[in-house]
Length: 290
Length: 314
Image 1 (cartoon, helix red, strand yellow):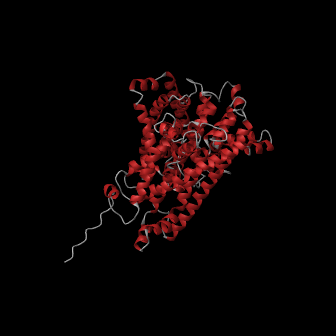
Image 2 (tube, helix red, strand yellow):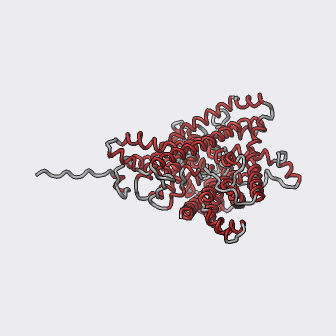
Image 3 (tube, helix red, strand yellow):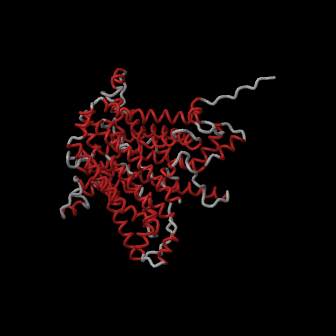
């Protein structure tokens, strides 16, 4: 009687990770490429920030992170990003509504151009917005007459951040509006609700998850934004200096410890926001599909 | 892609006011800046415009941008296909963690993305002394620019492909294997043709971002004119030197590129939609393929299928 040959064992990576073995090949190869590349390009470089911070020492770290100039930068970054995301939430819902419910000449073009901030390099957006809102620009010259400095001020920062965050709310709300069952709105109308009541009581509740997701995405994007803001903000320390610019300034002065400490604060906030966005999208996805 | 469902619901005056409000908002933030770029670019006349975009420094900036794009995009395409294959075709531990990690570069501020490479390869960085000893320059040179570009465009292809391949399922690939195809044959004859629209879509987004990246590249470039300036950095240099018309002229190239990107994007969305609709019709399955749930939980909606358009923050 011949001995039955032992079954060929799966490679180590597959044995460790796979929950169930399918027939498809290439797990080891594709997983290997993914993990190695991810580690080399993203994880190891990001880890150096935390490594570098540990060499600064706690007291020095807090001194940098809580200095008045840093605090002013956080306040501006958060305040301006929040204001911009709020403006985008309101007009994002309006745009999504108009694009998904109405037909008007040029609708297709408008729909395509909403994505422009995703595709346009931020530096170009920065100089274009500055050109318009500066005191000699097309809009700036009128705003100056009524006492509003739109460029080289905090308002300028908000304007740039509205631009970069513009597509987020539109693109999260639009598919929801298109999927909504119009029967409910019609039922509300039949039962005597006015158009506005129907919107507020029937449509809006269905939109909330998408609006909040879009808001958070726009907010997260605005926090990290650099290119469009530097041109329009004027970059005055304590007044119009956003956090990414503060990091940049410290890097240019070869103050790597200072730059790293502030980067750690920003990274921590960004990671937290990423997790929030993931939860939110799971939540809004569930609300949409059920 | 959207089609209005019913326009008759709201009274005409409400419709007109809402459309007007949207158009005013878009004019203030989108249309006017777009038009301004071209008008400012042509302020000193057409010949000055062509002088600006054919100046030696501009041409060398264009070359550098193309070079770093040609390094970053293929790398991220290979990675994107590999990651999407592993994530959508196998069930393994830590899958949702892996998806979150792939998304990381999107959440990181571009300035920090550039900074991490300065900390690694800069003169005072971890590998600084080693690189100096062998006379290798990464920061303030082309490799650093390519690295920073790769980092910021890292997730684009993977993020488009994952939902796309998830929606397609693996039946056709399994059938090919059962019928005797080798792994490579299955990949080139079944997988690639199936994912081509998703792959193309991700590649277009990745390329657009790679060419336009400013913050991350600005940190690692050192702004050496004619040597380490990419097109967006060259725009900044010209602008800061008060060569406004020249800055806007070079910027207009980037605007044209982004308009091409948007057109391609719409075209692919439309083609991909048509292709998938026909496939669904052939199978007698109205409404197309349902989006299968990603194993490992709630990640499926963070990634949208192609026909809905992308929420990727470029």
